Length: 563
Image 1 (spheres, rainbow, N blue to C red):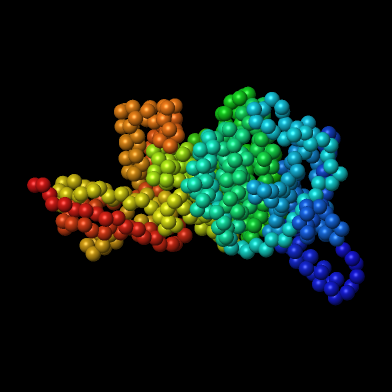
Image 2 (cartoon, helix red, strand yellow):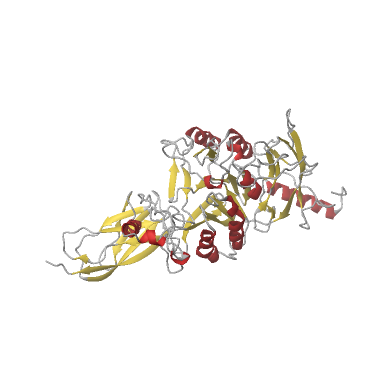
């Protein structure tokens, strides 16, 4: 920067100062801009700079950006006034910039953010089935990160996929036709994320699914899932070699508006060559990264943790000691949300101070989202030649929109191929017998419901609103689908459809539909039979956890008693 006191120069200095203040609210946290290497380590250094012409090279006059966090996956530094940073690295370490608010990293042709440099002089092991990182050689003299200006509101909408998990190119076609096609060229989305299981073990499908998802037309971030691992890895740290080559570090962070997104690889690979075994958890270096990054943040902002395997409310699916350590790091942050996928059912869990290891008085919301693949792209095909693939808790496959406003948020589940207002399935028996001894049940699956939702029903013109009871039961729609599947299996129809001689147009997956699982978002009410003969409109009214009201209806037919 030229040092003169002209009016233009003063205005420029004020502008740059304003930009710096917007990059990281915690730039005064006391974190250094440089950390010296220990014995056996090397020093990675460079600049975070304003790439004014977008050529990804630091040209003359392109100034550094102060107050931007840069990490090696464990340590975090904040760039100085000139945009300079320095970090120690081992012979297997990422160096990445944490995208600040109002700036954007470069995107590649598949809209994947290029925010990292992988330092791996010897490259990944060459005996892995799927290629990892090629040898990077000596550490460059400078590792620079170009950023371009990108005005961001503190109110924005993001798109989230859970477990696309294709096991074939046909599954990727299902994703394209069922979901991506209705999202292409959407203009009101800030970015998208996939919450792991990007593919189903075959990591050579990464390019094909990236090209497909890129058609949405927005920056796309990815979380590593258990089906995205290199199973040959002799240690957990090496299970992400192919993921690193394609997407960069598996644990990282970025910022948008007043929200801070911490992406965690929470799949702990079991140390056994070729084994797909895993458990949910975090390594100490990941927890150290979270701790250091949190030191740069304002306590007023929203912290969003994204991961593949959900936190455990009970059981050992996520190592409790790691969960407790992470919750302890978040104890001073009142505005938090965590998002996972993995289970192929949808749940909204609330961790509280009394019954879990959460440290704050207000509960922590963990959104374990449904999946784009539903039940692994399984089931009989519909009129669009795509499997119905309903999840075993009765949630139709789809995706989530999360609208963030400041440090608050609203989550919506969008069913694939349905209107945006399709938020529930209403089940009522057909042909209720008037004045009979039967006690028909009204069942409502409010797909994104939780213990904080309230459901009521009425028979239009015949009754007042009555409250429904939340239950933990099998969804009646999925129960019927599963029964039909069992009959087709019993009759040998499924074997015929799986035969090599069957045309792909009529074939089905070799997997059976998963066994029904009690839904966490199902409500019931006893309807009784004291209704006039004829057809009546049964209305359902929902008040969700955000205070919004939704209505839907179903036709109830009442017929004369046989007695």
